[in-house]
Image 1 (cartoon, rainbow, N blue to C red):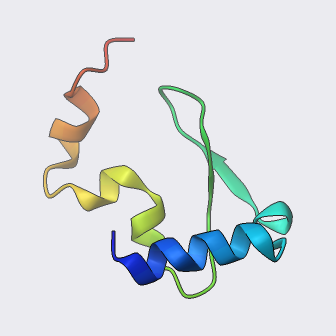
Image 2: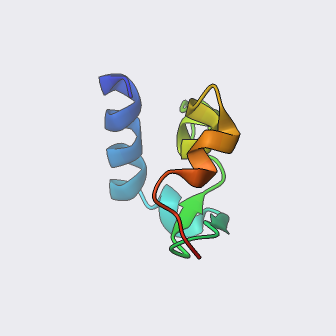
Length: 64
């Protein structure tokens, strides 16, 4: 993740944006992830979208 995106997420925490955000839940750990943060590409917020092989992402260490 680029530093500018990390900084933008920290800014969103401080200015209350994340408190007003909508969230999705991850299927494995039920983590809540914001669906959007201003000036941060949406695909960065969803880890599996960073993998070229999404099927491999879903298999790595996840045993339901």
